[in-house]
Amino acid sequence: MQSITEIQQLDKMKTPLSLIDHTGGGYEEAAVYYVETLSECNLKCVMCGFGNREIFQRETGKMSLGLFKQIVDEIARRSPHALVAPYHHCEPLLHTELPEMVQVIKNHNLRCEISTNLNYAERLEELLKAEPGSIDISVSGFYQNTYEKNHVGGDIEKVKRNMELLRNLMEKTKCYPQVTVQYHMYIDNLGEDFDLMRKFVENLGFTFSANWSRSICTEMSLKYLREIGNSRYHGETLQWFDDMPKLPKAYNNGIKRMIHLPQDYLQGEWENIQTKECLMNHRIINIRWNGKISLCSWTFDDRSSLGDYLTTPIERLWEERQKSPICHECLKNNYVFYTNYFDMDHIDEIARGRVSPEIASDRRFFAPKKQSD
Image (cartoon, rainbow, N blue to C red):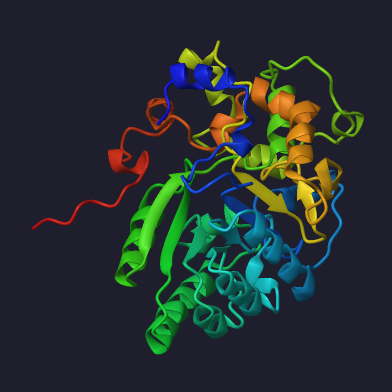
């Protein structure tokens, strides 16, 4: 974990972090690529742009296998040690050619990960045979009445059946990706739901991991800070962003159940701290279904997208991020720290004041207990 002093040192660096050699093997464009294979999801999660889509301008579409191959070819050329994730702001299993896309990634000897809500499980066996390195499954409860508050439109019983199916198919195919069930923690799902889901997951032989839920959309989070009077940015803004509707009721209801809030890195020792350098986006590129580059991995609106990945040099991407008012507002409000769980001690300290006393301490940020000898 970086100290505040190290953050200040980063601000003094003149070389763009996107061009720094972090691997020891030469200069590379990025370490992680999220390739949004389709702009579609079967759920409307309250903290996600899809769950509040009515306030955004976002075109729906699906990436062809041909375009995907071109993009991965270029990724391999520019960044041969990258991790490629064929998803982002979408449910990847809805893409009918996902197994073939994973195979394209593996053919280039690139690492591959999948993240899914697992309400849909077509072609799951073919997906396993393509051998993604890891599969993350997001949940937020064991019982339906808890789960559906956050994974709106989802069916937790179907998810559990699909987890069991996944285990059976792993044994059948002898393909064993790292499977992690990510439990999104809210104020009201830390009791029996937490314990039962943890037991269910571990009985399947999967990894159970839990983390504080977050507001994972840049535009909504910055709007939220404005609307509650916590934004400390007063510079240039974009007209379309200013004109976006107020945050929907679903978002405001969801954030009331959260423990980790966008303003948490504007308080306490962080009150007078900020960075002029994005600590993550220099290593992450998000490519949308139409081949365009997102301003960052957390923006959702089409109006925040940049040029085409296949024809846009990394220098232009860096320049656009350097001058974007949205990036300036994000940095001024320390949102980049919030999205990346930058200081877990700080988060735990805040959480202790927000979680009821009867909640066990290991729910503040769950880590698997060490096996006894």
